[in-house]
Image (tube, rainbow, N blue to C red; front, top):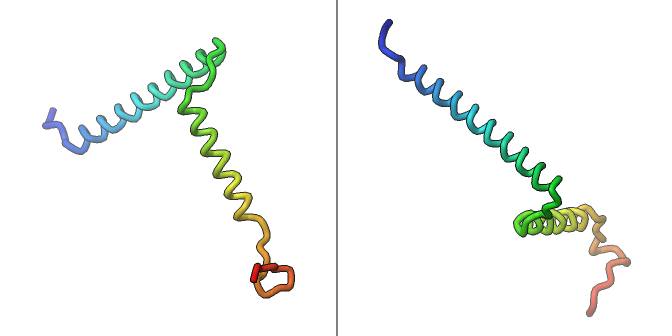
Length: 79
């Protein structure tokens, strides 16, 4: 058997790291489901994320709202 190719070794390591990361994600999801089914409430971080998401949704709604043309008579500007 010849020497181990560095590229093959790097490929193997990358596959192993992906496998480990996927397993960690599965374990994390399982823990989260177990905590939730046990009656645990969302953490402060989760609540903060929810507030940020709600704020972004409100901002997107404001940006999607129709704008008034400044030249139209409907545009009432204080003088």
